[in-house]
Length: 276
Image (cartoon, rainbow, N blue to C red):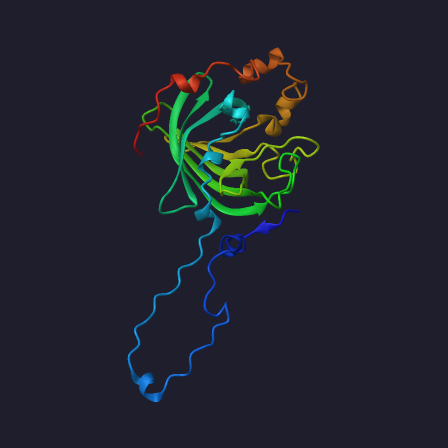
């Protein structure tokens, strides 16, 4: 069972090295005011500002964008859509943290379902953190802070696109923070594959539904950095993810002609420019 780290507890690490107050360094408290001084008006002192939380200290935009060493050769996230679990692909072209609400991240990107490529934009809002156990990839987690960020996302497809809708649900990101307060997505290697973690070892996982703008009809949708950890049982039974790199003909009707396609479809498509 993972230990949940609430923001006030995490914030302690950010204030541990702050300058101490007079009380903390042992200065003698001033004498009680005389009766005359007590009658004088004393201007109210401004309240001390709250210590910044990890959400304000660490920008997770790079990690949310699926920027990993593995993603250099394939920047997309793969997943499954609808009751038939047809293949769907997502590409995040830009992720930016909100300047006023540091827990919120703005996302721009493209998705591909069958032959249709649709631009979208939306937000991902972090709600809490949990400690991430040590792994072979992250030796010395006592020196490199490691967490899972839990978030809620809403991604709205371009309303001018035929059949457009909205993706929404829960997202989870495994990330670590180095000594320079930089965040990066965590991947799992060696004996601990991270299968027991919230992201199931994928590093970045989205699970939710798609809702049709016109009819309101909903379809299940999930995608992640490593789709093998979320393969539906129906597709696993006919070979997807359970027989090495082999792709069998019966999987083609679900969009799985190849494991990883060299076609950089996201680079050929127009960048999302629509306004919601």
